Image (cartoon, rainbow, N blue to C red):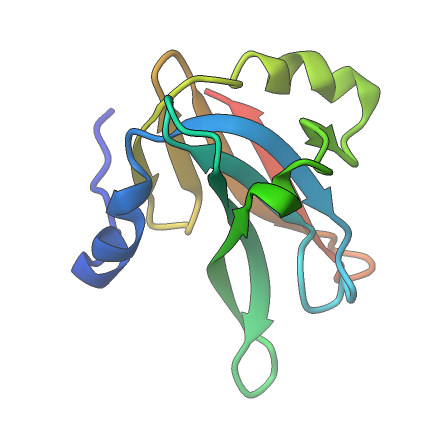
Length: 150
């Protein structure tokens, strides 16, 4: 079933420069406050033939509004030069069982982004997709970032 890509033109303008870059690493950062933020999943990317700089695309969700009743998908882009890259591991803070899955994305080019009505984000790579969604624990209210292959 086809879905409408709900990215706005501004979001497309911000994200389009990342299309065509290859994935070179992954990092998971624990949430400072699971009541308000999910963990942050970052994908390191660069041009295929250049190694002097890389960009981290960070993805996480947060609550906002008067009573924290609304959910927002947040992107962040961090840039690094050669000195910062040299000390980065390929896969950081993920469970060992997830390493093989993430390894398959290394050196795959990013081909597009898809946002659906539930604010689930799909990153399309050359051979497979990564899907991100938020999961809110009904008992504790904590936010968790879910990610899976599509």
